[in-house]
Image (cartoon, rainbow, N blue to C red; front, side):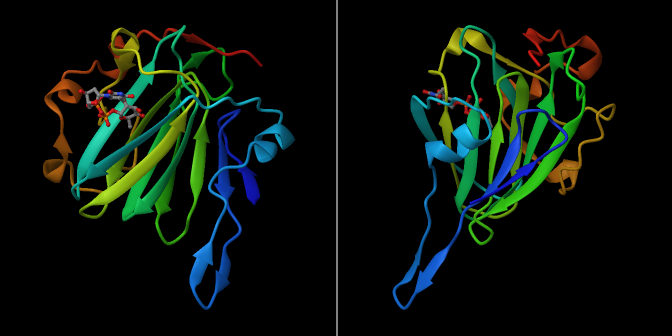
Length: 186
Ligand SMILES: Cc1cn([C@H]2C[C@H](O)[C@@H](COP(=O)(O)OP(=O)(O)O[C@H]3O[C@H](C)C(=O)[C@H](O)[C@H]3O)O2)c(=O)[nH]c1=O
């Protein structure tokens, strides 16, 4: 497993070792010891899976405390551009985002710490997105930001006119009206 730091404190890119043989391949998709190596004491309590058509954008979402979530995200089939935006007040990366292409071919995974808004755009039809979260879903704790605020100039790699966005996500606030409920703990 190769673990790469990002500009967002606590966010890491994981590249699992692929064991190929005449039958196909094997990878460990999660091993807690790699998080412990990075000093992250994760306790995932829920696994999620969504399937998206090409050009579907989900996000930018985060659950507020006490239901904030760390997320370990990956793609089982297809491809996404995955975005994490640090909104922890006091973070050295506050207002900064990372974008990582996660595909069924590259097997990359991204760990997104609590306090980051998360979203992705599906680059292929029938993309299967699977992720582990460190806290339970709590509908009343959902918060978010509109996906395409020009002030953040997030590179979604698709033509905005083609994006398929839920009605709920289309109503999310823009960056200048976003009130972060998160504080950075260094
Ligand atoms: C997230 C979630 C949703 N649901 C139910 C609620 C709705 O009836 C339905 C679809 O939910 P939603 O439209 O919020 O799904 P996404 O737009 O994929 O939301 C996710 O998208 C971005 C990328 C995220 O990082 C979050 O995990 C999450 O916000 O599933 C549940 O029952 N449990 C859950 O954990």
